[in-house]
Every structure is written in C-alpha cells, then in structure tokens.
Length: 228
Length: 206
Image 1 (tube, rainbow over the protein chains, first blue to last red):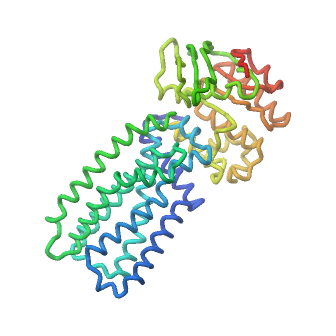
Image 2 (image 1 turned 180 degrees about the horizontal axis):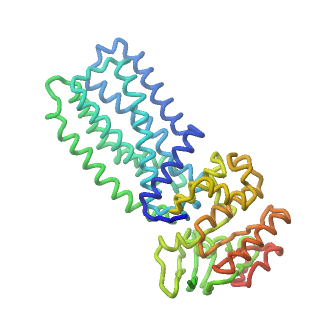
Image 3 (image 1 turned 45 degrees about the horizontal axis):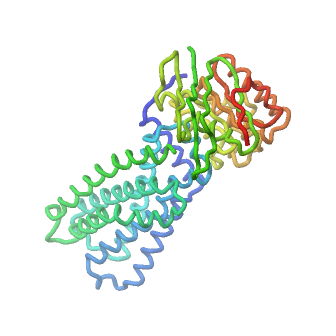
C-alpha cells in the first residue's frame, strides 16, 4: 500500500467519480443533450429554408443553443453534492483545489461531448457555410472550454446559496457574455471566405486570456466558499 | 507519534443565535473521549468544527503532531469522520465508493485489497451492489470503512449507533477500542449505550 498527495491526484479521483456517476445516472448528459438537440432541430425546421438566413445569425444561434444547453446541465455539478449530502465527504477527503479542478474537468468534457453531438447536427440542418474548417474547430473548442470554465465558476459560487437558480442566471450573464460574444465573432470569421484566421486571431487570444483569468480567480474564491 | 487536538475558547453563532460559547479542551493520543449533551445542544456542530468542516466564529482548533501544528491539508489527512449527515454516493457500489475515497485520499489500493477491506466489515458479498440498496447498518459499516481507509490518527463519530441493532453497536465498540489504542477517538452522543465509549470530554447544555 502506498500513499501520494497533491491536488492533481485528487482532481483525477473527483473527475473519475463524476464520470462514473454520470454514466450511472445520466442526469447532466440527458439534460444537456435533450435541450441542445431539441433546439437545433426546432431551429432547423423554423428557419427552413436555412439558405435564406444570414451567416452571422446562424453563428449567434449556434452559440445560444450551446450556452443554454450548458446552463441546463453544467450548473448542477456542485449543487448535486449538497443535495445528496455528499459534499462533506468530499470536503473531508479532497482539498478545495482538487474538487474545483476535478469538477471543471468533468464540465469541460461534458461540454465537448455536447459540441461533438450538437455542432455536426447544426451544420447539417442549418446548412452552415463553414469555409475555414481548422479555424471553426479551434474556435468551437476554445469557446466551449471557456464557457465550461465560466459556468463551473458560477456554479461553484452559487452552490451553497438558497436561491441558486435565480442567482446562477444573474451571475452567468456578466461572466459568460464575453466568451460567448467572442466565440460568435470567431465562428462568423470561420464561415466567411474573406475573413479566416487573420480576422479571428484576436478572438482566440481573448478566449485563451479569459480562461487564464477566470480559472485562477475562481480557485481563489472557491476555497473560501467551499470550506464553510 | 503523539497527536493532540486543542480547542481554544471555541464559539459558534448561527444567524445571531449562539450555539457554542468559549469551549476549551485538549485531548492527546492514545484514547477515546465523548461529547455529551441533549439534542440541539451543539454536539454535531462542535464535532464539525473539530473536523474542519465548519469555521468557528470565535476561538480555534489546533491539531498538533509531536507538538508541531498541522496545516489544513495535513489535518484533512489526519481525520476520519462518520456522521448521519455525511452521505455516500448512493448510485455507486460499495467498491466504487471505497475506491474513490481511497484514491482521493492518495491511497493506492488495488481492487483485491479493497475487497479484503470490505470483507472486514462483512460487505464483500455486496461489493458490487449500489449503496442505495443497502440497509442502514450496512451503510454505517461502509461509512466507518471509508472513514478509516487512510488510517487516520483521529476518528470523529457523530451518533455512530443511531438506528443500529446490538450487533451493529458491538461492531462500533470494537472499532472505537481498536482506534483508541493508537489514535484519538471523539464520539458525540446522547445515547446511553454509547456514553461508555470514552471519557467524558465536554458536556453541553440544551
């Protein structure tokens, strides 16, 4: 028997546990995928024929679907521990940094799964005119990761509040809006023949910068919120 | 190795209502102690403060190893706790719960070793069943195992015998006796069957 310490190992354990719980219950994945697929299919039918819809509207609609699907599923990652009274078991065994990083990793993977299922369906149903495929994949990857960081940060803050639902909406607005707007702009650039990487390089920098700021800031706040 | 827990004028206020006031005490390994008092007297709150789950409004709780003060991470490693309001993951099996909490504590235990531990609490046959299907006594035995899997020097028990039959009570008595040989056990209770688990440390009023 050997023993090791460190937040990375703790985060790995929390991530593996959350994945196992999700596979067993499918609560978050069910909420996220159901919302996203329903929205995409509804938009596909409502906007028929999609060729008449402008590219910037389609880009905005794609990220609105992704954002609201994320809010539906990713916001419960900490709340569920409080509701099932397992939060104290976690507090006793894992450092706040380990908990936050583990939950962030789980939410990020959930977000990637959501995008892997939703985005291809969206591109087909709404005939999205992707010109720069490489840029589109990079923006989608960074945008979804940044949104996962934003929603995890807000979910951590509201986990112990009594009016969680309302508070999550209010706090999500200013936190998630910057990466959302930038991701929409980057997606538009990937869909325009005369735009491409040069037009979106600023968006990519902002998305990376956003994640570099929001994660350490959330960790600082989370340590105090989670402990008491 | 000597372990010591020192409570210095600990107080806790919830919504302007004082629950605990100026509690001071000190315990040193090896041994077992009890925190006694009727329902609502603040036993669980005090135990949660000792565990580090609650921050006291006044005073502080010190953990000392050979006279040297421990930080939050070291204290987390030193404590195992069982309480009615600390639940296990009900959709996961006994083995999965134990595996997660062992890994989270940095213990590298393989499944055969984990199954051996489950055997010690007579749960090996149910190792692959979800905790949601367990009886109260089985859940309590699994909780004790998860609290002890990292071999903590400090074991905190909040009403450990609640809803347990005589066999369950005897099992807890055995655990307390074993742990008290080398570490610290603190039991919060108002059950007369549990009051002889250790020396009275603190008596709280209603």
